Image 1 (cartoon, rainbow, N blue to C red):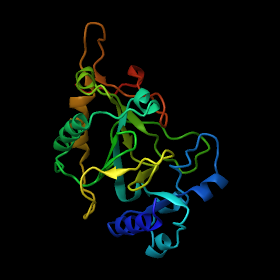
Image 2 (cartoon, helix red, strand yellow):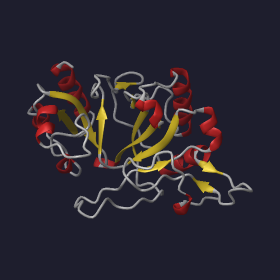
Image 3 (cartoon, rainbow, N blue to C red):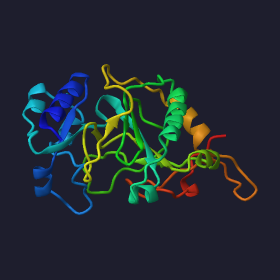
Length: 260
């Protein structure tokens, strides 16, 4: 990873309105805690960037020489991301989904959200999943606050699991993760294996689009709503438990969000 590549992209994305973090391995090793991921941890204070616009000099003064990635702070100015996650078994064995099926799924999602087919704010993750970045208000798929000790009161990630029809068409798909808070890695960051985050199309030249919550509901209605059956009389969305990055693959009907 070339220092100048990271710095150049960081400055470009900052110019488009994003608050920028860097992933500095030297810093992260010093503050590492159990459960943290060195290649996903922001090294500068992301909490200060949640409600304040970052100065250009702050980006320039970050230590890019030992950095392996850049990221942004979700929640700032209503910046959000929809994380399309690959099933864990494929991640564990570094198996990537078929590119044409990923593009088919992405096209379907972008059309539902009324975004261009070549929407530039789509990143392909090292595992073969996707992040779609946009501005949006709070969603209606309620999740609890983070654990008691977290003074920042950020919303936990909420996962929506594809319905049986979608799962059959896209068997690699684990869930749709609503990333409304926390931190998100951006291209050209790398993971611990040297694999890179990449933009699916061209490098963004404009700010992300806004997606209204009604469009998100329409998408999830089509892809995550499971109709009632004789064996499962409750109809509604397949919601994963309100735990950050936990319970993937689990259908939680006890906290179901009904929509008839």
